[in-house]
Image (cartoon, rainbow, N blue to C red; front, side, top):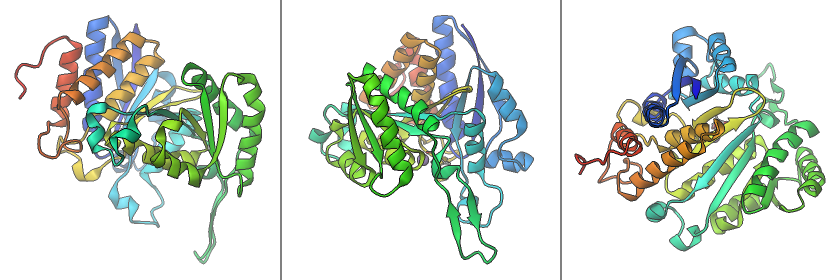
Length: 359
Ligand code: IPM
Ligand code: MN
């Protein structure tokens, strides 16, 4: 198969982790007879520096016509501490999500037994943990009307949802639950928010079309406690944009490192694949960041291309590095390997070459 992929390296550690995914994709291409070609485009602080625009038109045009988008990370500290900045790197990603109509962000949480000791939770609490978060990505408070009065003393962000926006992601989440352990938890704040009450109503109505799925409703404050207290109770979590942003970072640390977690954003336009970690500027250019979140995002891209065996081989390669102790500094501060060495090892595993010169 031939696939053209738009690659957006982005900011901070984005370039170095994404390069490892490209190594891995090339190895898969070689082994399985696929041809992956790449169109490199700009977004984020990198794009602001080079063009003044966090999302140049060329980037959107490229994304619209390729088979998938592989994205690194976004953000730069010089904007984080400047509330008056008019142009911000994050605007690029938000606008791209909207332009590609990527309304569902899928974030699986996988636990590796060899990393139990790194989790803030006790090993026992991690047994059988396997959840996936469906986060709505193009609505809610992120995209509502924003105001700041003339005096700069009052600000607002509207949170708006329509039935159609809720239904389309809910269908995806229900369908995935049917393939998994058949449980769906809607996370909301229906005791306070009107939008949450609409989410509940819509999900309650859809539930009858998915009679084999058990539906559970949980307020977000309780859910964020339950994720720590008893994470194995969750199978598919469905939630709105802002709650999903927060609880997915929280859930990702169960595995031991935020650096391991991948994501896929899907919707009407070209799907986009990115690790859930940010730009981690302190590590940028040092070849120490964990590339696994990006590599597993590339595996989700292979699934999206219906290259299921290939995706599984990538996951097997990742599991093999982790259980063999080939890990980056976030996982083991004493015995660790560089970003690019982990990428090489995963490539070698895919090419059936045993890494004899490591150790
Ligand atoms: C994420 C990030 C983004 C978000 C930022 C960078 C805009 O935190 O993908 O989770 O809040 O959606
Ligand atoms: Mn986030």
